[in-house]
Image (cartoon, rainbow, N blue to C red; front, top):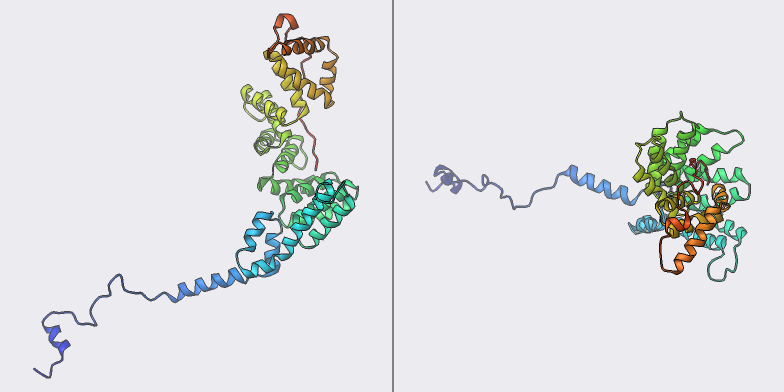
Length: 349
């Protein structure tokens, strides 16, 4: 009996031995080697990302995003130093271009281009775009396109959109290639590219005419704040081309375009206000359109009813009235020439 071990006796009595005692849930568990390996691999890939690849990925970043990436780790901070320097050069270039900033009395395009090119040499896609735009304005379109192409390949939406315009306006236009770049920039949410893509669908450049898809892209660009797209969206709703006819939405988009400075929209919104009896505001928008050189607005200015509208509105404004009585000014939809609206199909950089 004495020779029997304690564990044998406990086993006979039905008690669990130390070896058989279950591990409690709160006890420390051994980590899986596979899990440790994957975590270590992630850390290594995060910190040791090749500098050239990181520079390429960060080339289209704006300043806040670039600074956030630079704070990720020391290796990223060092790798992205050229792009941070490029942002400083880009800012200086903009100051010289617009003639604003300490010690800058007037615009200096030559110095601006110099700074933009230095920023482009450091890999900034935004600097490439600004340098390309200056070359374009100087008539050096080949050099502009080369810079836009570099920025586009780096994924910069403005560079992609401007490259598309270059392909459309080349001596031998390539509308299919233009559409490809417009689509990439539009997918990134760049409103002007959305508008340009809508124009291509509207006019059948590089794609078959598809007014329904054109209206969809006009609407997306309008919602993104692009003024020409707001005007065209209004016309789509007004005429039912590409969108279900909805006069209320047509008026809303015309008003937004007018307030954003679209001259044709100002003229048409002025006519709408005139027809509804809001003479003071009608006069403001009709006058803005006239001064912007809208042909229909210029013809309207020569209309005797327009002259009478100005006289009556001025008189009633001094009397603190926002409206002019229809009898005194002869309010009628036929008094002012009705405009036959046409889509804004102008494409610019």
